[in-house]
Length: 471
Image 1: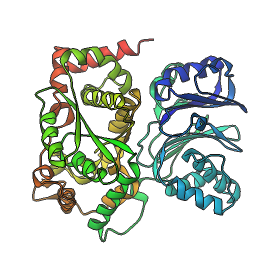
Image 2: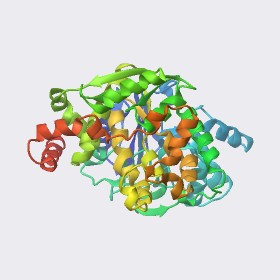
Image 3: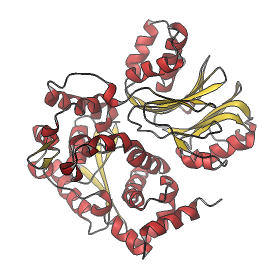
Image 4: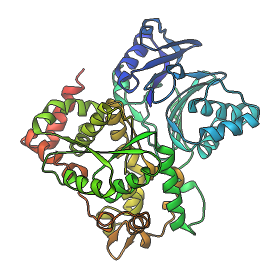
């Protein structure tokens, strides 16, 4: 995980400011490509050597594995920076080598570079055709910027797991504040979209609904794909953001087959989420780590939370509070990867509003990147933790979208098919059918925030936002 940033016609002062503003996303090393001049440093000591340029791409890296020498950009005829994880990079590397590609590293980012080179130069594809073809082959979470012929191209995976923003003047960054630091507007690159800078040309290339396939055999298909989605996202030691509800409990149960699993929950001492997490972790026989927060701690850390989420939205502020404390505890434990149950509600009809209006499910899936995933990514990265989402694995999502509605909401039971799958995997019935409160209520973060705000939560959030991002 990392920061990627850069743009067209950047001064030295601008690129340095953008790197410093987003450095929390990648504190281990940085690399810059500026009109052909390359600087890479493991301790930021060479940041003064950076030059401005007509085309600039930069990365700050959080070392998950391997050497700090893996710092980007990767460059050849194309220059590329990438934030995220490509889980099938080894098989793609083999496929590319069979077609004549050579590699300088075993890093997944280089696989994206060589894939684009193969399609653009060897197969003579247009850039948009090459990127779409790459999207169909890449399995993972990615936000990518690459330079070719004096232009910069930006794209995200079709779900939009990792955030990426650009400005009308041709700058880009992983977080809004990186662009704000140089007086730029921050516009999100939409999931599955290609943006060309500086023209601001936008092309929608791929959505989960575009991936064709049969809905037959979906029950066994979902089981197999979910197991695989969890497996490829686990590390030697992996954490799970845990509330004791269906979504996180099923992820924890599956992850425990492949890795040493530690569960992380956060809330007040009397919160329902903490109470239930204790009960379910005992049943699953998995270690639970708790962060019990108080009003005083929330008051002390609330500006950091706002710095992460970058918006004066009181609901997102409340949701981010337990996530902030859980990821902070994980980082203290040196657990750098946390699995999340995000996406299950939107895919399988988990919210009560879907009983009256099931068409909202599609709208919520389309908006999950900006509504939920960007928030969670930024909060995790502030604490040096990567959050991964097995339910949002593209093959799993594309199959889940073809499951008939009556299998998702059956006789008033929401997420019916996922509950059946959970029982098949051995999750206790009481856990599989528990009705869970939203994170901001189950953790009591909403209650604490209301006490701190005293009056209007919206006004409080707006005032806090202004204080944190005042220029």
